[in-house]
Every structure is written in C-alpha cells, then in structure tokens.
Length: 193
Image 1 (tube, rainbow, N blue to C red):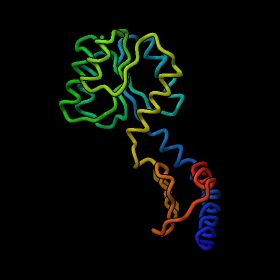
Image 2 (cartoon, helix red, strand yellow; image 1 turned 90 degrees about the vertical axis):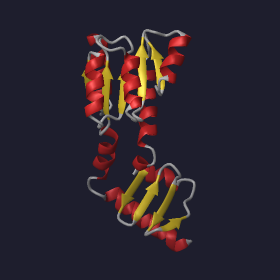
Image 3 (cartoon, rainbow, N blue to C red; image 1 turned 60 degrees about the vertical axis):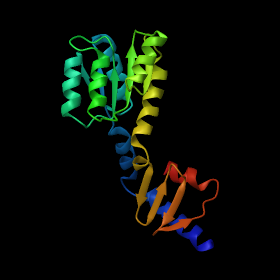
C-alpha cells in the first residue's frame, strides 16, 4: 500500500504544478451551452446576463417556431430553458417535437402557468424541471447546475493527468490502471486540484 500512496503523492504534486490544469477544468465547466426560449425580452436579458456570469454560453430565441427550428438543426445545446407561452408555437409543442425527435436534452420550463395541472402536463411532456414565474434567480441557477450535472453524467466527472485517472462520481483513483486506496481526505484534494 505504501508504494501506491507514494505514486498518489507524486501524481498530486504533478497535478498541482501542471500548467493549464485549471483552465482545462474551467473550460469543462464553461463549455455549457444553454438555449433560452422566452418572449419577454427583459427577463431573457436578465437570465442571459446571470447565466453568462457562470461561464455558460447562452443563446436566446423569442418564439416557439425559432426555438423548434434551432433545436432540430443544432444538437450542441446542453440545456433548454423554455417558456410555455411563446408566440408562433406553444412551448409544449416545442417540447413534444424535441422528445419526438429522440432528444434527451434537459428542459427546464420557466413559465407563468403554475397550476398543478400545468406542471404535471409539462413534466409528462418530457420536461426535467418546472419553475413558475416569479422565481428566485438563485434557485434557478441551482436547478440549472443540477440539470447540467446530470446531463454531463460520468464523462465530465473523469479527470486524467498522465498516469492518474480520477473518477469524481465514485471517488476512485487509479494509476496506470491500478486502483489506489484513498484516504478520506485524498478524494477532496484531487477534486480541488
């Protein structure tokens, strides 16, 4: 067990001093692309400003038909924030088309329609989450983070540096394919690095 601990210390030392590691981690976090389909320009501007502040790339469309067309031609989005009361195509129709096309894109419905029936209908149509207006920006940001974490699944949770591989989800590390016994503190250190 001692040689593995020594390897881990060496790998952690290299991680700490690796040039560009922070930018790789930050790039992984900031490469999220969010589409906002919202016809209220003031609300959309506020959402775009807040989400861009978290490092996300944010696009905005003001009609259901534009959102529908964008979602059918562009599979690069990581999240859709969808208003239901959109002009030219209702948000539920956009959602129905998205799911009919086989997309698993996470969808957060953000709408003034907040009855239980409306929430159930939105979730049954395939939305992953539902928030009624008015809403807390802090809560919306937390829900966006949660949906993006689920979207990224295990692929975004693996950090590689040289021979070291660390899987955040399972808090498991290996060097050259050999599992390393980690102390209670070491997973936290690897996640910070």
